[in-house]
Image 1: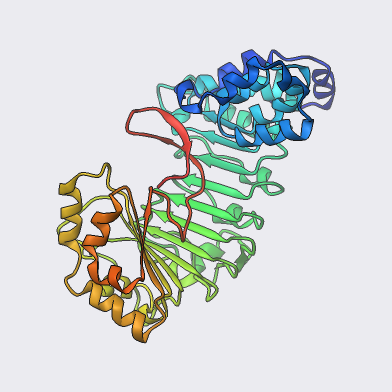
Image 2 (image 1 turned 45 degrees about the vertical axis):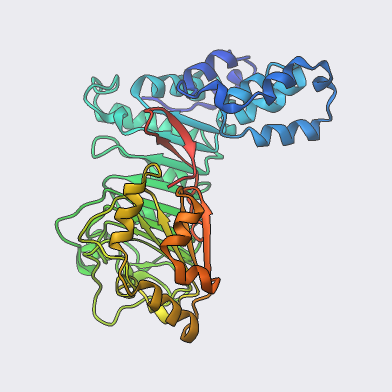
Length: 426
């Protein structure tokens, strides 16, 4: 049984952990030092760096947040820099496999529990619960006890990304006092536990599938108190989900501002409040909604990852989800990989021939103020693709892969080069 005993914590506080060794076991090994720039290398070579005011040093460390290599370099400048760097070194941890998880457990629970106060964000990979994991030889009860002890040692945790499947379950009740950002990948054990987190502001539910949605009576049989009110929830993302157990009689989200839907059914829409400001949808042909259920939003982001001949970008596509005459800003987010001409031509072929005329009509007789196109394609090519919108002056072209109207929150992702890094791109 793994539990945190106060006397062990007090004695551990007086121990000096091998921070360099600890960070090396929890670092992101695939980060390229060259990508972090040359500034931190030059800064360490300057003796004057040690005489900088602590306020300036803190600003430097804040700039390097999420980037472990320059932070480690900063910690080597001098003793005062090392003390300021320590919290930043443990702000964001990625426990991608069982071995890394066990090292983190030993450091944060056994050897140096005082470091747990610095952890703000943690990623626990799905591979921890895989059969090949170092934890697979132990019974699930033992692993869950470790999880309980680990999260109990993280009093300042703000963001959690996890996806265990059914073998390991994160103890959500232990997070109620601090967690504000939650990424759930896989089944939810209890909706009641989720509703016990009223301070969550950003919630992502991914790959949750049920054969059918539970009824209100079925949920009531589970001794749940309704309706559950997630007052602080501002942003909700539903990705590849079906029959999520959110019903108007069970869930209220009065302050929801941004709703992101990606390959999911419409079960969540019955809980969407009138306060919704931004709707993010994927361009696809099989969007459907209950009768007389249209959202009144001012901002719409339509994103497209791949080109499908069955998908059609048109006013009707957007009109399946919201009242188009109420939309003030429409953003097209093109997430194609690379900027090849054939990809741009494929996208051009899926645009309805009347799309520009429809947008101009909404601009003249509705509330539409501008159309934003965010992509990695050259700006001139986008203007050539929408000549009418460009000539009218309502077309705005932005480079990159991050939405303007619905910025993506930073998360730990694997890129096409099979390396992992923190990113805010879609």
